[in-house]
Image 1 (cartoon, rainbow, N blue to C red):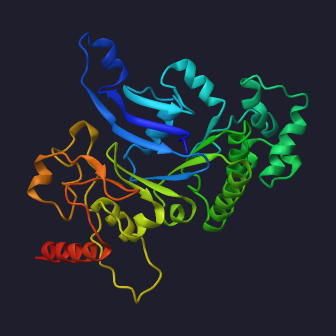
Image 2 (cartoon, helix red, strand yellow):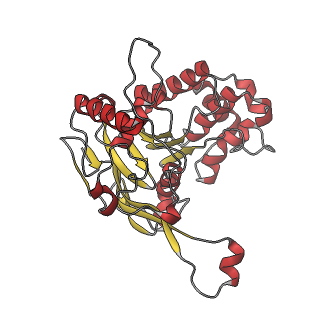
Image 3 (cartoon, rainbow, N blue to C red):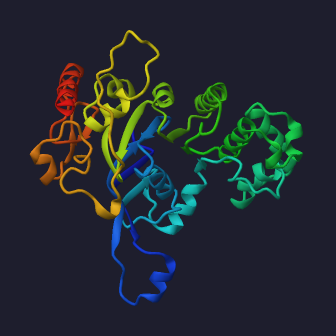
Length: 341
């Protein structure tokens, strides 16, 4: 099957310094890669979970895919066409959409819900004889009453605003949905309702989804594959259940094993990630995770690891990938002992 979206060696570069410094300084300011060498594919109808700590580059990658952030290098191929040029990005946006992290802030407070839901179709030149009827149909699709067409965003609860965001994102019937923290700020019960809604609509319409999140408990149940990001690079990708059962990268392992388990009989063997994620302006030498890795070796501090295959459907960026879950337990237990000494 041909991938719906292919990303090859994607890089995004930001110049250091504020706007005023860039305007007043005649010399080019130093630039830094926010994303570096990202390679990822998305199949039609597939759900990919893009996971990592805050500052790892997840949202930047999603925004770059839609052309909201300009790529400095690499390719973004959507439905067989390279869409890095601005013209192609406009064509891509007719078949892709994004759910933003803050559903209320992403909606204009001056417009009613009915207008907000039909605005994407108007912008893209889609014929719409009856905007009000179209808005009511979209509301019904996400389980909201037709009377909501006359409400303003501030009159919605968090869960209702999120449903309106789902309806707006799917108004153009996209082939690709990018969801940035779709359950952020919601109660657990409401999170489940929103995820079930997106899953039902995905089965009905067949779109692919990329979900940006740090909620591992949630993404485990909704994604087909995981892509783990650290400091603007992918460090591991693979089928969700395989990654959870036997993570290859120590960073993935620490993220998974730091999730609370509601069973006091299960002994914890993880060694949580310590310290803050480094700045992209001062990337560590060698493997960028070595400053926080509980299993670091001398080679890790000097030599950057390659992003290589680690099984039929797995990729990992690590000199010493974990081979089995048993080995992971043993290695982490030894690291914990060494740290205690």
